[in-house]
Length: 467
Image (cartoon, rainbow, N blue to C red):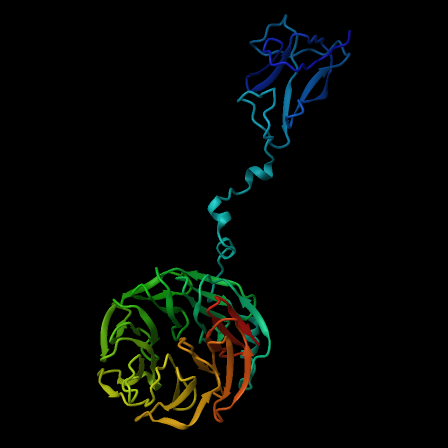
């Protein structure tokens, strides 16, 4: 007598029943007749709308094979085949035959042990999902190779684009390379999107750290002399000293005005300067978070501050311009006594949005809104060199910054047209123009070690590295 197991397309519970006894799933059918035979495995497909397959154990012709019954099963009742459930996915269409809640679908072992990712982590940017690596412990192979050379670095003019870093969501106000030689592959950028970042600007171009210490636009940023801290000034009326490695603020200074410029004392690294929408420039001690000195002037806004040689004196640039002369446009201060040394340095009716100190000679330059760079002596009485000026670029009211090459032979400046202009420092001639950005290029930073490498940023939110 042959055995037969049949599935009917019926929702009746009287004909087909599935139940679980002692943790095992069994199947019973009114039309099933079983004898004591060896079981064989046979697979029966489920209804078309389901992705579940059923595997039953079917007896064979061996009459001597015993039948094992459960404790609560009647021996006069025919044996029921065991049912194994295999799932191959999930279907949105509900099948006619519903499995009981006690039957759990099979989940592969690899999927069971895989980490569960939250929706927040899936929506996070790429640099957030990537595991953070140490920032200060790694040394760039390109920088390391240049450090091993015994010949002095001779600065050159960049000719081509090395990488474009488009991670900011707003205009980028400044870019600066780390001043420490073995960490000089680190590139700092501060943006109007309330963040500042540290990039690997020599090798991969990856964003190594994202810092969110401010609630408003980050207007100014600079490295500490040892390269482990970053000083930033923001429109949220504060300045912050942040640890580069951890990303946590060491101290946050309540300036009570919008901070437009910051500077770190070259000899006393715990002292920082903050200036902005205030008639005074404040000097803070970051160890106590207190103001130790104030440099007061009858002005409305300070555009930039610059420590002169050794940090004994400083120069501040203001927005004060009179009709006949530029009185108080540049003011020289004594750092220790806060006394005003001179306010008759610049005698033309233009404001100076940025200042830069020459790395070798006793001089500094001021970017002017007259579309030229003016040269001054960094020693008293800070006379302006009227024979030499660097012109040919456009400023047009933007806070365009300028900077020197490491050996002081080149002077680089951005422009409101998006170009970068390179001048010969000693002759004042423009030697190269780099078409860098589509919008105003407001900051240029030559690399302190690599000869031709230069970083630029613009109001289009891009940071670019040129070689």
